[in-house]
Image 1 (cartoon, rainbow, N blue to C red):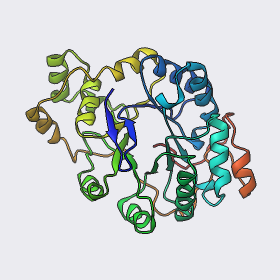
Image 2: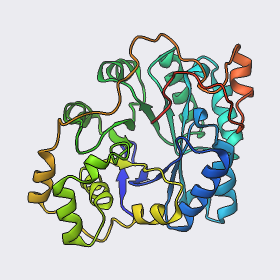
Image 3: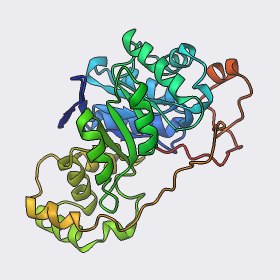
Length: 302
């Protein structure tokens, strides 16, 4: 495993397991498989409805708590709930603290939520803070008022969309970019790009492993998701080879090809993606690991 040093000197494993779109049973099994395969970082979120399952996998692993980097995200429906939203998240995970707490979407009162996260950071409930799916103008808005600058920004990032402008903007703050869907949403076209096919053959790897290695050498945190234990193990088998400067330059030519995600920029608030939440109290107390059949239009990736 390789590590990123965040701007507050916390060390973060550069690769983790993402649990987006996993049921509780799938998340628990996948997290257990990842930890058994040597992963040191698990990513979840309020909106994934699987925090309790991830917490169970961590508890059953027998691995010391300080050897596992746990990331989770607050959903906008709890942004105005204050510290109870953080405490409820910790309760679901069965943890005293999380290593990374992230605001999941740039809607609602995210500045108030950031202040709550800063309070949680100072109280030792959180070791690092981040933003997910925030466009650059809203990242700037948070940075302007923040006492604690973001350690992480989670966005769409892959060889077709390198996020060069955002990287340049964040560099002075030492903020790390994390890629959700680092393999381009599983796009077969990306995996079959000739440059990745050729490099896979050269290094005895798969195209997916080459792409993940490219992310690592770009200094990007990655959280590929998989429910298949063999794929989980394969995704971690990327630390025994390196791409050359010329190979990195060749991959860079793909930048600007396409993106897979269009942010929701016109929404003033977000509703719970699985079941409606009507009051502040219920927003911090009724989150369960039971998926609902009522899924709303809000995108909770990242």
